[in-house]
Length: 355
Image (cartoon, rainbow, N blue to C red; front, side, top):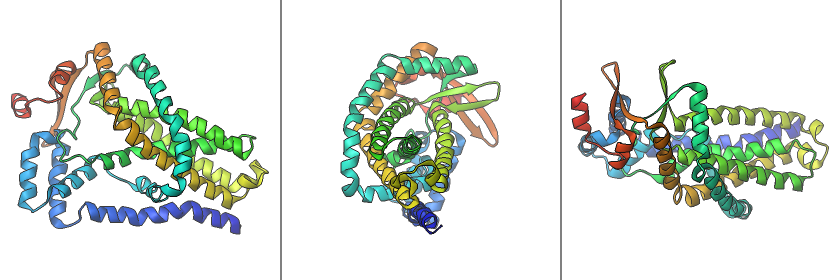
């Protein structure tokens, strides 16, 4: 029982660090009355469904009126558009430990990069991801449309915060793979090798998909009267499975590890808990490497290529989905192809006035 209690404390230690970090982030992003005033102004724009670009000059004027500097503006807008939650702060200690874990992460990250290029060729260049979208569309009878992203026109977008916002699933997939493989009757060395192999495949596959769908494409479900951005569709599909799976696997391994495995590494709760933290923080460093090496260099190219493929296959229409005084309105604007040709911009005043 003492070992089990110690192991539980070890596994909870990232949570003990994450709570004060989340409070510090809240303070850093802005808690003063003028910060809350500007936050409410931005929230009203987002609640209206109109991208920030439409009200960029008004928001800047409001920020100057309450003496907010551009950095604080950008921080508040990023916090509303890409909020950091407790799971994000669980990963931050890994960034502190990177000098110790960097070598382990590099061993996995080096073969990961060519694997991502191979999967990009399979999914994007060979149009297999577009075929998957076709299958989903036919099975669900949803329509494919476009809706401008609300973060269009955000003040000095912080790519670091956007990357942190995207990382939890990337990281937790590594831990998920480790917990699954640890059930197999393999030696510790083989478990580590097989976990690394599975993680490389999983994270490369998911990263390509997430980069491709980080656009304005939306599934429209007329039957249930709902709109599902493709980006949210994948997040909602993966998130619960990974989250619930991690809790189940961690609990089972922790309480029944000695019955499931007879070797010393996985039957000892303390050693198992330490190995979980090692995998978690190593995967965090790998997640950072993916953000720096793939999303910064190849992410936009993958997104635009996939978007063009969807335009060729579905010829989607771009809509503006707005709310005003409790009234919801979805207004057709133009074809998505025309919007892309205009560099994803148009005169919001002219469009809104005409509607």
